Length: 353
Image 1 (cartoon, rainbow, N blue to C red):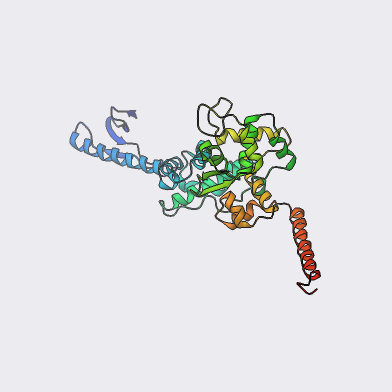
Image 2: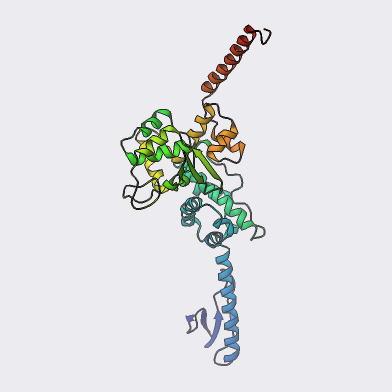
């Protein structure tokens, strides 16, 4: 058996006679006999062209049926393009990690057991990353299932790490340390995130021109919701001492004087909080703001007017760590104030005891 001048064609000699075969077929499939190029040149070339086209289709089908091809297709989709810029950046970071493990994996051969081992178990030391990859895999499955009939959900039955990965509000001692940090750039970023209650991407996108009449105007990148936030006195004070960059219009700057990105802001927060025994993100400051507003006696509508939440259930989720003792003390205070007011009115003859 030997190669020939035609790729994919092999020559086999038996009893002094040569035979030509097309060999580029599915693994395990028998070779396909071709006419002799010397005895039937036209027949040989027609058959060879036919099998080359067939092999190309098989290769293309394999490529389209692979995880890597589906990711490429998803990145070209309207669903992906409609994501907020920071969400796409986050997705891309984890999609690239998934491609390392699954780029050539056939979609129909992906299993929950394999993902449990290679994604969830392998990243147990960083449960937030594992949960994010699981979330993206579920998005990709829904995208792929609409385009590949009979595809089995490769995330079925896999549990996220849950509460271990949830972005938590910052503890009071770490938050106070951040608000008083000697690093003026970091200190201003913390004040802006805390006292506006916005997502990190929106905080980094805030401009000096958006500050007008005691309000700061924001259009949220994720939802497109416009909000006008009355500025807290501490934020006003922080902005009054802040140095404006000559290189851009944004309020926040990085160490080089360029506009601060949410990725760099995340690194700052993690480095600062890890030094103090925690591991907290800029998004946690949004929860601090939600909790503070609830604890101050704000209604859900008043809190949402600051944070921009559309869903009351999500707002409750963000504010679930608010202090029960503080709320209880405030509730008793309102109760006693009401009783005192009633007694005063009765004493003045306006209301019977």
